[in-house]
Image: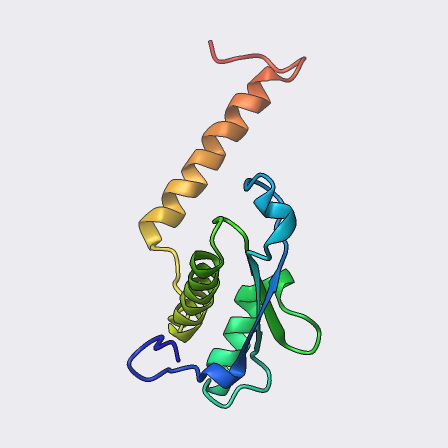
Length: 141
């Protein structure tokens, strides 16, 4: 039962782990032992997540989430099954932690009077430079 934050705890029955054969390092071992872990977490049907956290988690998960709202994390970095299992659970916990943080709402701001004046004076200067480059217009004498 991984504790994500003080308020969020995901029960073990909501996480399913499947061990599969991994590609990569391991020699003959890689052909015999299923060390890679495929973690599945049904975020859409989870009772342990608040609706807003669930929504943000699915957005953060991106391609790792299925259309049904199941987050799939594959861990095959390590040669040991136990390390890969811990890695997958830690990665899920990190995603849920990020999803638990509410984004601060954007406040509309307006440009200051001086910044507007500065922008307009730069535009006038640039316009003047380009005007003087045109053929047939005499320059300042």
